[in-house]
Image (cartoon, rainbow, N blue to C red; front, side, top):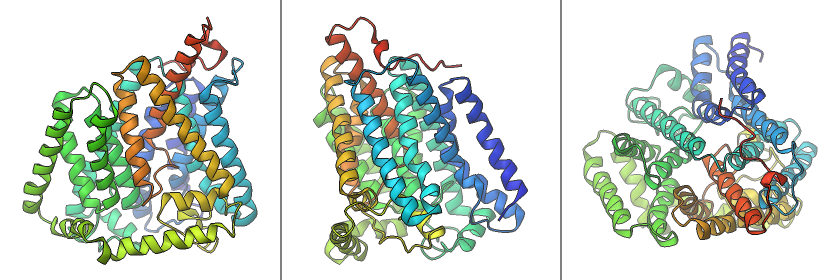
Length: 454
């Protein structure tokens, strides 16, 4: 359904990203972070003011377009110089691009328009990872990107808490019109799970946990830090997404274990403080009884219907993958499948591993696993050179906890801050590898200042 107001709003959301990429500004990443965080809220307000729910709103596609611009900016910057084949970051990008291209072709053949609609989510990691590589020697840029994700997460958390207790009319309107009423509760104060500025509780929980990682595992913002952490933690709990809570707990536990020069005592004190706040304050906050009841089921997994259902779907998807060795392609799962392809293209599954296997097939699955192995190995290379790099230590904790969280949900293929940190680490690893080989000019690969900050 064509709507001129929606089209104009979408155009003006995309326009700044186009000019930032055109001028080779790394502020394009900051802008992309905020578009990812708030585009759905803008879409709901526009739909509410129009008095009609637009199932195919162009505003929902703005993150895909903005991240697509990032991919183009990265490709242009990286093609200015010959790229050495031995550079790991080059291999990672190419392997991932091959896997996505193959899945896209399968998706076009099987799922038609749904594959095109889903492509943006799978292209986003290339642009974000590439910009991380290009800025690996610019700590000021990385610091600014971390501040942007922290500020965006606080904004999402504050709005989400306000949403939970008041239910803005545009959010209630969307909940009913989109058919999400019931699944995420009723559009009444404290009777709905928090979905804040995003399309669903799972994506917003995943986005918020990235801000938690940045605030907890990096130094800086001493005044802003702890109030922001508490605010984000409250919002995460109100989403009732248990996977995110488990991922966060795992990251807190393994952070001092896999990183040298990290104080176990300080990390333990932070964990204890957050646990005390959660267990003692939560019961006095209105509406948290539903959250407590849902989290309590983690201690009784045998009788947890949600967990048992996921185990069944995991088994079913694993068996189904043998009949689809090439995968079902992009657009076979999630929103693209349900809204465009009618949900008939594949059996959905909440496990990230099985979603990966079904979408990419066995060949793509192996390629993605190889890519992730290269990313993990690069963190070890950087740690050997500079064992106190807080960005790399953050990524290592995120990586290990994310491997566990991927059992329950697909957080990987989206515009995640994880990819920026992965690109940063890959870039540093390449730089040290070239330096150790006594190559004088590291221009044989990506130039770290190809994108200027203005």
